[in-house]
Length: 265
Image (cartoon, rainbow, N blue to C red):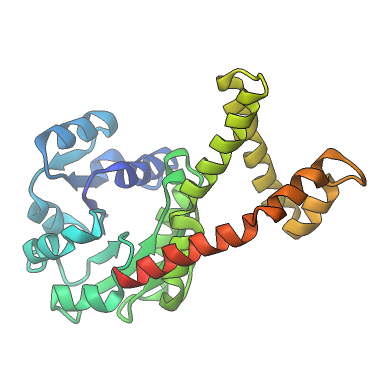
């Protein structure tokens, strides 16, 4: 089975790294293309995979083909490869806002097997989160095959396409919100006298550990919050200020803006 990547940016290289590290693919099974020779050579050296600047060469060989370019480049890229893709190739888009119907219209080949997914950047450290929806020509077995690949760098779940814009808001873009939260906590720790490096470490580890508690205990986040808030203690005072400043509403409004932007792309 040959796995192809058109686009070799951060997300594509994170996915490639996960697949290789988890043994889901061998380096000789992967081929990728990039716009520049410099990027192609860099990725080839890092992963020992075959790379090129010719998208058509990748499309012709791939049994599973990831479209890993930015949405604005989709018309140009698809126009260049639509006649080269094999009828039984699984074509997987990782672009925000590009619906299955868009892909179907752009390729102009109703027999093609199309899948839309939305991974996020924590895939770089094998802790990604990916939402997946499949077109009508994709079998359950083929969907499971793709999920297995995506789970090599985190979790992956099937969602109905109507929720894919929500996936963008809750996981695709949300690492940026979390990074801002970590940065803000660290900034105040520095203001209170902690060295910058140590402040980032403490803040990031606290977020990591809190997330693991949500996933591994199965408890409601509100219940876990209450466990930290001792009567008359320090934590409840901090929570009070966050509520006064509208933290929840700010996060929800930010996600709403993100979701609406995804819908309009």
